[in-house]
Each structure stands twice: as C-alpha cells, then as structure tokens.
Image (cartoon, rainbow, N blue to C red; front, side):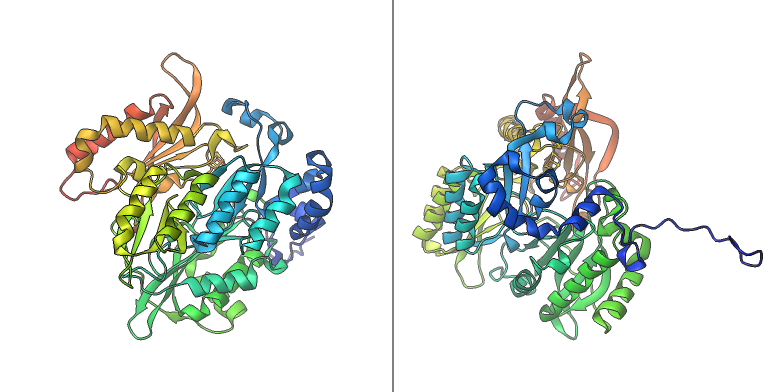
Length: 547
Ligand code: SF4
C-alpha cells in the first residue's frame, strides 16, 4: 500500500531485462533456454537422436535448441500456403531438416567448397542455396546423418555452430576483403577474432533473440540493417578504422541502424562487439518475442544512452569520436570481372536467387583450382566470387562458370533478384519464391530485351514467402511480401504485397508499402515489366530507381 505522503507510482511493466532483475522466464522460448542450455543439444543429437531417429527427438529440442546447430525441420511437402497459419507446428514438420553452414565473411577455400558440395551430394539430395547472409543452406538432411555431416564439415574447418537460434549468428563481411582496390581496411582479422573467441561461448549463447553482425572495410554488407555493424572509415587523425552502428533490423517494424558516432581501430572491434552483445544479453527485452530484437532497446534508449552504457558499464573507457563512412550510390554486388590490389582479378557470378547445388559447388571449386585460385566467397546478395584469377585465365573461367549456370555478365533482372527459401521448404511460408524468381527472370529477360541496355544499374526485386524479411524486401527497389491475395475471379491465390523504392547506401530507407497494391503470383511478370518500363520512360538522367 502506498503511504499517503508518497506519490502513487504506476508500476512499470517489466520488459524481461536480466539486468533489471527479471530473471524468471516470461515466455516459452525463454523457459526452454532456461530448462537446458541450448548448446547441450549437440551431445543429444550425436548420442541419442542420431541412433533413435526423428521420432526419438524431444519436441523442445526439435523446435528450439536444434537451431543453435543450424538445424530446422523443413516443411512437409504438399501443404499449401493458405494453411500455414491454421496448422500446429508438428503438422507442418517434415522429418527432414534444413541445415545451415555458417560461413563468416562468406569466405571459403576451394577445398572447403568441395567439401560443402560433397556433403550436399551425399546427405542433402544435392541441394544448396547461397543465402543472403553468406551461408550455405542444405535441405533433406536426416538426423541420423548429422554425426557424419559434422565430421566432414568440421574436418574441413567448417561449422554449423550458432548458424541459427538466439545467438551470435554468422558475421557478414565484404566478399572482397583484402583484395578490393578501394577498401578502407581488411576487416577479416576482427571477424576471425570474434569467431574464435565468442562463437560457441555459452556466455553469449542465450540472447533475447538472434544477433546479426556485419563487419566490413567497404559498405557492401547491408550494414544499415544489422544489430551491430562496423563499417570502414578513415579518421582524419587516426587513419583507417571502423564506424559503429547498432539497432538495425527488418521484419516487422523495420529500422535503420543508428550510428554511435564512435571510431574503433581494427584490433579493438572484438572488444567493442563483446560489449554490444553483452548489452543485448543483459538489457534486451525478453518478455515478448516480437520486441526482443536489439532494435527495440536502441529505439527506446537512443544512440547517446546506448554509447554511454557501453562505455561506462562494459568497456570502462570512452570511445573515440569518428566520422561517418562514405555512402555508395549503388549497392556493390561484385558481379563481373574486377582487378584486385595485387593485379590479379576477381570474378563474380550470379546464379538465380542463390540457388545452386552441391554438384555445382564441387565444379566451381575445380574450375577455380584449374586457374590457380584457392579462394571463393559468397556475397550478401546471393552471388559467389572467385578470387585471385590471373588475367590470362579470366575468359576461360567465365566460360566454365557460364556452363554451370553462373553468369558473370547477367541481365539486370538476374543480377537484381533475391528470394528467400519460401514454400518449398520453409514452415512459415505462405507462397513459393525460388522457382517464381527463376520464372520471373526468364520472363523479364525475354520481354525487356529491348530496354536492357537502358537499365544501367540492376533493378532489385526481392521475394519473401511471408511477412518475415529473410530476403530484405524493404531494401529492394521492388520488394514482394508473400501473402494470399484475391485474383480477378475472386479466388484466394498466392500473391504479394508490393513495397516500392527501398534501398541502402545513398538511398537508405524502406520501400513504401502501397495500400491495396497487391499482385497475384501469375501476374508478377506483367507487373514488374510495367513498373520497369515506366521507370525507364519517366526517369531523369542518372535517376536511380529509389529516388
Ligand atoms: Fe521462410 Fe518467411 Fe523467411 Fe521466407 S521470409 S524464409 S517464408 S520465414
């Protein structure tokens, strides 16, 4: 009871922040993480489930802790998107898994690439998608095969650790780190240090939700939409270093990250990263899953308070102020042939929406080795890049990649398309995406051949299978959010809500959702053709799509 002399204070409803004493789990995800540390599931997979098979798996592991090792159940075939929201999770579960291989900085050796491909051929029905987080994603994995899969991958220095889950996920890095002629610095040492010191560290493996990091000497990693990002910048007094951003994210309530105005030298990035992720662990909101990403805390605190807490409670020292990084006018996708710092070349190639196969990856590894390369990188735009190609070998490599379905001179449509996993395998999906992206590219290449030369920068078209934003639809020129729509005959069919004019870099901002602006899947090629023709016909000289 409040005393008559004390003003009545309304009890503020806790957000479930550990640092403020809210230790009791407030939802089933938090309870599951408290019941057993998620990293413990690895031993159960190897010792119990791999022998007992799918039916032996504890549901709390199956739909929760498996994610910490990159495993999700995939969608049972034959369930249409209109039923996604009406079914229980177990009704959607197939007994096969999607498995993500985490590839920090998107960087693999050709030996590793061959192993990734061979694992796919042996255990994943030859499936492999390059994700927009520079991972490789397999499908059709059986739990019985996981010990053998890990033995092959880990034997090659690869891992699935914390590829998913409420953990520090794969760190995005520039696909051309260490070779680009214009990078501010090569951020690879910071990525390597964080991975070595903190990935798999139990202290950072129970976060309020996922934690996405990007670290790059170039603004080519969508840094604006990460929980934390470090972007190369030259300080007028201290030279090359990195500018710190926090609180970006997409899905519902998308937010552009905020600059802390702090400049960090390369060898301090890991320490500052550990401070930021510690704030998220300790002060992040755990009451509601849909408010648990770091962006909500940053929105409430603002950048100044966030920096102050980081400096006083975690780093115990002030950070140096620093300038903002340069903003590119177009998003760099590294497709095509480009000169490296050392005079050799890197060759970027585009599959359609990241879809390749294990056999293709094995063939790419061999083709790269034939021309003397030992390094390949995946990009945040679902492409791949072969590094260190001698000038005399460039044309031969391009021809080989083309034969594999990887174009080094793609049309703007193939180059600009991205798609998430979609209905084929994802349990949350409402519509099909990958095959639809391939059909769209084929249709646009034919229909828009007359204006292809007029489109000087790729027009980005991103397809999501549901309201989540795995394919970053809000940052695309044409963003397509999968949903059920009504067609001209009144039927409920797969379709998309359209967002127009999103972008990163100079045009950083989210596409406008146009009320009532929906297309059916079948109408999609007509719609995109109309929009692109209107843009080409009406634009000012050098006007970008997002303007
Ligand atoms: Fe699945 Fe939706 Fe993400 Fe696509 S956007 S992969 S459908 S959760």
